[in-house]
Image 1: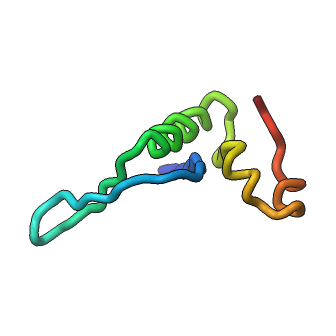
Image 2: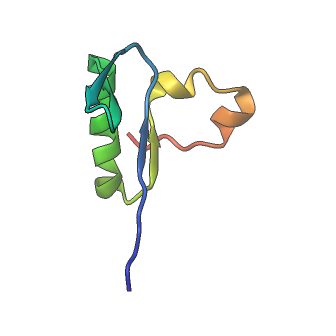
Length: 74
């Protein structure tokens, strides 16, 4: 039996977008130090056995109710 897992690393910041691929299939590519933070945060899901991790910068932008629904882990 197959099991699909989806994990997310969510951060807020700036990036630039570029397109890579061919005329038949074009994929967006986003580059910035903030994108690297997203990738590193997403990789930590395995360590913490979670599926969604948010950075403090992102949590700061949430409403009070939203902030109250997350748990700080580190």
